[in-house]
Picture (cartoon, helix red, strand yellow):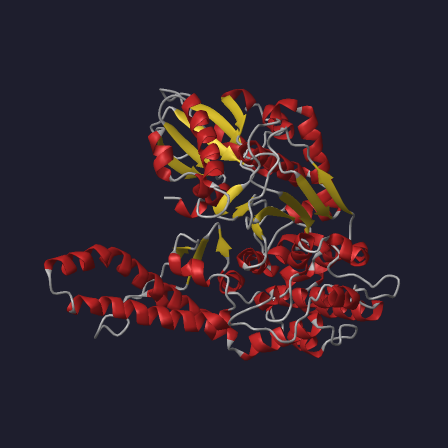
Length: 601
């Protein structure tokens, strides 16, 4: 069922089990039949912890989406609200509870489960509305780190970056520290902590304080992780802005992957029947789950897209050869053996058909002129060409009113690759954007500036060339088919965040002190004492395990680069990745966008 979670160096099924256990305990507190009212954002993350079958075992009979008005009729004893602690959701819950028909019998009991933390503010709000007393159980469910794959954990906190960098709200950092404490309770104390950035420093401080405040949390589990690396997203603002060029990265860029699921245009997946001439094409998007439980996907997900075609055609030959075997099966034993392999072969054939269709969809886009022009400009900026003047392609795109997010990604990329833009260039871009797309985007531009993405150059110095050369962020001769460096994930640009992880493992950060000082925030190292007898003695040839935690989001291309480092023969380190949210340039910029709404006169 969740075999893909236990296939890596760290068995993440234990984390999922802990989450399921906590959920079962809460459901059993509310005796009798139940209906769950879901905050819609939580259904995806919860689906990775517990399927409907688990809820059913604990008498959950109905599920509704949280919306204003009366609750749908349901003949159940308990109504449980699963919600994030947000005031706008409390208003909807208040409406639901107040409209409940008190005259009906038997009466239904209300409960509320806050995810990931109870909030005094929300409870005070419910009290003021006069409904707090209606809830028998008011509890919290700490869904901090959700296992997405055998080496990937995410908090799926969509506003973490904005909260940390624009609103100075450190709630998500507290949740990150709590999540790390849960991990240490399950997988042992992590002896070494390294970090870069202000948020990283906060999280490390909170972990150290939590450990001091709960001396009982000192467990006697042999440590699974050797090192924790905490990285602020704003140490590397460049990687999410660039277009990812791995198979999984492109699926996310074009269609968006939500909680391991992707929705694709259905016409590519319609079964082709002779003589029907394409009538009755499906209209519902095709929904596929993408994780390493699927053999073919595990093999191609992290490859550069240009290397995917040859793998698919090789697989097609192998599969058709396997099906041909049936003609050679003569004896009963041979036929029996063929039949026993059939389910696996059919699964492989349908998986191949799906990924061939997805690859064709992506290829239509990556071979378009617009994609090529956009990528050329990105690569010029990243290799340091013409970053200090107004770019013609960007001007043309604005004039043709291309999607605003595309423009913002390019302008921010240019700003980051130039350590900020000259005031004249910045003003020109801002004026063009506001005049073309509307002055309501003024707040968005302001947010991007606050986050350090689109800003004037201060001190008149561009540090990016020094950083690029020292950390070898741009490689001219990239081998996309058989890569020998992480730069293959962007066809030339090596993600700065992953380069920092790579250099930390070998030769260590002392070799790049000067560059670290140029990047925002402090860098630090902490050691956590292990009880005697738990110090690790590494076997010869055994790899170290490093947990890299991205505070503010991580892209699939960066994940692919870390997986590439894990698989290197002489790497010596295996990486597990944790993050506040899986992002791409579009979702990231979207989370920072704000529209000025006209006053309702």
